[in-house]
Image 1 (cartoon, rainbow, N blue to C red):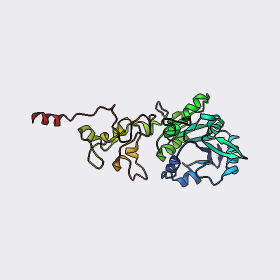
Image 2 (cartoon, rainbow, N blue to C red; image 1 turned 30 degrees about the vertical axis):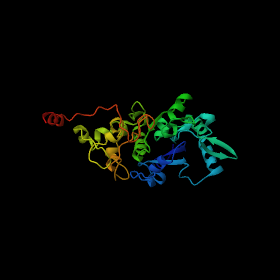
Image 3 (cartoon, rainbow, N blue to C red; image 1 turned 45 degrees about the vertical axis):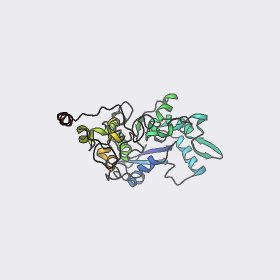
Image 4 (cartoon, rainbow, N blue to C red; image 1 turned 90 degrees about the vertical axis):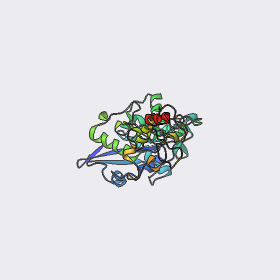
Length: 298
């Protein structure tokens, strides 16, 4: 970190592994702070992020881009953001960060070189946090999440998981702001290393369809009034604040649009939460006692 005129500059290295660029695209839609604040001004007063390397938005390419990344490796004290899972099969050849002078460098190489030097690591998105779609069955590239790579190589750098497919920009930048103002040691994480501020409650707890669930009123087809549980909603087992935060400047969110939550912030996504429109079976549905009593009397 460099201080100049009471301003602290935080170097950031952003790596992309096996991913779809959806996480990076989501972050570019941030509103508070704006992407202009994040890239060109202060993320909060007195603190500026300086992105040394970001393959999605940087103008450099080829040898020049890899030279920039090489210079970053000579430093310490940067924040390392990793977007996407890390292929490990065949020495990680299935995800190449770039080439310099004809020599390929994989995301696995970069992660192993950069993580020990980082001030902290943020595993951004479900693929980086838990493996996600990139590590889904049958996982031919041997993709792993960031935490598994750190553990396998005994790398002790502190890290935070910010899952989501994609994650809401507030989840990342709000966490970064909290770290800058309160210190990393004061960020309360759950047992999956997710910030409780954003992943502390179930979607189900604050869902506008909760009353329908409690009444036992379930939609049987899309567009029908009622809770979407029967249509595959994973809200009862998914921790996130989408229902109160919403997306695209609070325009809407998935359940508000009439589609079920697919459980993308959890470690079991996508293989073990069931098909997108398949009802989960480990949540007990409420019984509408009044309805049952009327039916019995008839």
